[in-house]
Image 1 (cartoon, rainbow, N blue to C red):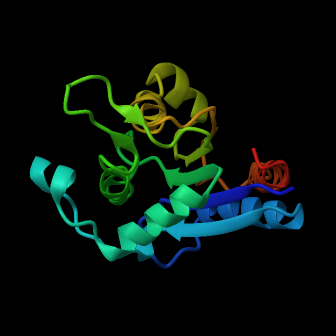
Image 2 (spheres, rainbow, N blue to C red):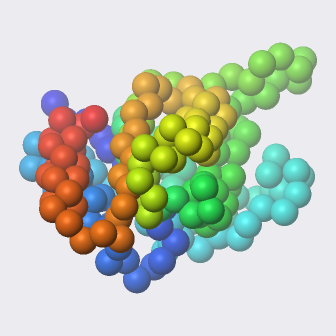
Length: 194
């Protein structure tokens, strides 16, 4: 029995054609070839405003594009998130999407008594794939992969998603044979739905 997978393409360029798009395509092809169901959320092609207040975040109207994305997120058993590292973190558009989609009432519930929030996305797993210009080991060891750790713990884990795996792909501007190895690896991960 195949798994239900959502690929979240977090590159903000709606034209596509970046290495992260090729990686996501390889993952999708591998997953579909193995009998898994795959849906794509291309953040750059969604129409939604950025949130600007606590009131909007907690009680504001959810835009149609975000409501439809939430339906896909609810359907999925496994999330695979692709994005480039910009200024040490995810692009602002992806962060804006996550703020809209992972709202109270959808991703977690807050009790009136003030206790710990209830995680509403339990039973789902995730993989985060980050491309970057620097060597991946520099991001992980010198910079401490701070934004990745925050994403895993403070967004995905906070909502109950786990386990969460990651792949850091560095030196993407260098045109070399490692690109083909990474594309092959993504195809294999897709077939395994990991």
